[in-house]
Amino acid sequence: MARTIFVTGGTRSGKSSCAEKLALEFGAPLGYLATAQTLDNEMDERVRRHRERRGSEWNTIEEPYHLSQALARCDGQYKAILVDCVTLWLSNLLLKYEDAEERCEERIHEDLQRLKSTLQGMVTPVILVSNEVGMGIVPDNRVARMFRDIAGSTNQALAVAADEVYVVISGIPLKLK
Image (cartoon, rainbow, N blue to C red; front, side):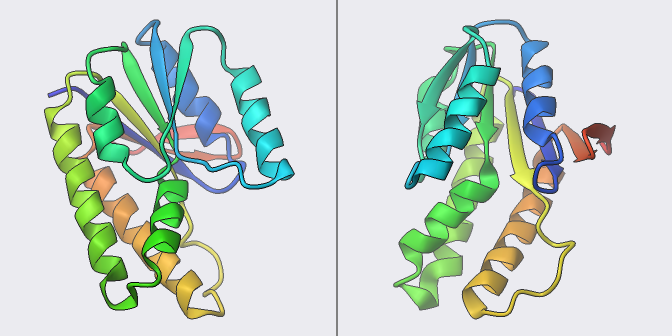
């Protein structure tokens, strides 16, 4: 089983840069599994800046929904794979499953279990980036509260399963595990 590294922190905390530095320690070639969907100009610009920051060592794979399948397809092709980010993946799944309201959380939990199972079988090290969303105010609507709860429980599950865990605050990584 390959190493799994989990990197969390608040928005704009420096967690992606930290995760990229950790990945570079494995050497090239590197896989960058992006879960973001570019649905507007602002997101297009964010993605462009992220790509510019990374060098030619990186190959970008875009997958907003089927994270475990994408990881399995990439296994063995790179020295390390960085997933950025788990939180956007969860957001994509929540919006996809929202119509099946009674099964939404259950379906996301099933996807999480598939991801954990895939991580256990990987030969390529995987670095997961995720936002810590539980330190703010309680959201004012049901879907936002559901998202916060799902993200919190997912982060807990992935942190427990990971070999190493970092939290990044104001650009400074702190190794927790």
